[in-house]
Amino acid sequence: MSILREVAKAIRITLVLWLLTAIIYPLLILFVGQFPFLKDKAQGSIVQNIKGEEIGSALIGQQFRSDQYFHGRPSAVRYSQGKQAKPTGISGASNFAPSNPNLLKRIEAEANQLQDENIQPLADLIYTSGSGLDPHISVKAAREQLDRVARARGLRPDEIFPLINKYTEGKFLGIFGEPGVNVLKLNYALDLDEFNRQQNR
Image (tube, rainbow, N blue to C red; front, side):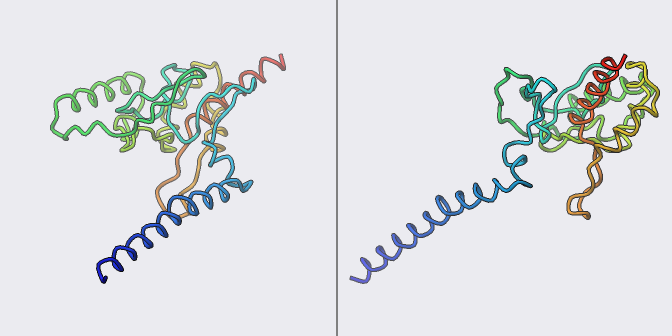
């Protein structure tokens, strides 16, 4: 009889834990995520252009190759981009050891390219992040690219610099990490600014 009581007790505990973790907790999180100040993040922080088209998530990095844009961190993964792209859900680092020849070759190529562009090869411009999807670069990395972007867009650096300040996000909770610039938001702001200039001509 004692064995049957223990089995019944184990089943009851399992059902209670299942109810708490599989039903009550997810519903609570869903409810909290609908608060106005959290709703945007809960729905993926999707950024839309002036036509209302989705151009990406402010939480996930993208690759920008043109000189007209600020470049984000290199990534060891190839995440989906664009309106028709399907999200891959892939995240991760290269997992190469520091002595791996492929890693050294990639870093040297990144550093040489940056030096050719007169950009200091800072860590967040040559090393990938742990997730591979980091949407931020340091303020210093953004400033290093300022002259290149200004030349490509036919603008003065001081016309772009306020946008860097505007899209610089502070430390998490004011104490963790370092301030970072959201590359997608900054690049979209550049396109929007250029569109507005053309409209005002």
